[in-house]
Length: 446
Image 1: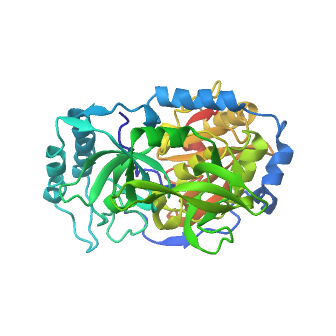
Image 2 (image 1 turned 180 degrees about the vertical axis):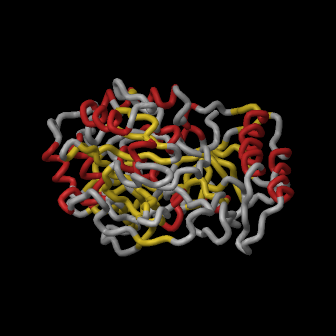
């Protein structure tokens, strides 16, 4: 069973700030070291040596996905046993609570949260039976995936409302999940999707049988390729159902000049799944995933340029790992949900070593990195390598902020808060160092 996503807060670029920096300033629209032309997919497509050559074909993508499952980085929900030992589920739940108890957290009133409040959630662990019968279901409305069965936020710093430390991820409309536990008040379910786990509101899940679940996952699909698409319940596309994000997949029914007809889950009278027909604008999706080529990855990534940052999918945004997950899902690759696990996917870039100097890292990435297929992991953050310009490596990533040194020796926070193109020199001269200095792995998804 996959462990809960690690919650990492040490990196300044993708997470909250420490106490030493109190005043934030907006980052410029075009960040230092970037020219405006770099903010288009075409700029990087033109610089790539083979933008239309497949990085992996369909069989290679399938093999990569199998390797991710075998490594325990993602999960094949259709192959989960019908019964799991309760001890495994209890261990997973306890691990979350144990980690939160070690941290100093604050409530919405700005006061420190007592460890006893966190310890109270061990009662949910105690209610897990010795044998857990796995239930299957689909998300019928977008929902927050929480580390604890509560909607109340907790913060690492008082009033730091952009970073709810209990927000693990977000589950989109139609996503398949397995249910492993319920809260004592029955208002929450502990679930796994293929890439994450946590507590979700009971009302957001409709149950189904294992056979229906498996057959739905194995059928033909329509994949969302726009940054966000709308689902409608009528052919005229006026009866709105839900928004869905890039990389989401739905069971294929038919296609017309205007729309894709798909099958989506809804709740029956007893809470069971019933499937209904819905429609997606033709321009927003494809029959199956896109071909995994550099051009496709560039174009998908730049569809999200300037879209807002959102820790754990908060407020309709995406954090650094969700950005990569969406981009690569649209070409059929099922990346893990968090940056630490994404940093284990694919193959290590030859000759890369985190102990190299910044100059050596830069030259190695430029010499051996493959644009649109190389991911660079920092502690708590991850970026997609775009390619080089004047022998300097560039990346696109969903970033919260960076630090900027000032003439008087102090430093200030510059909030990006969106998907942006940056040089890896960003943050140079600050106490944390540049992005490049903090890169700890470089891997190619092939």
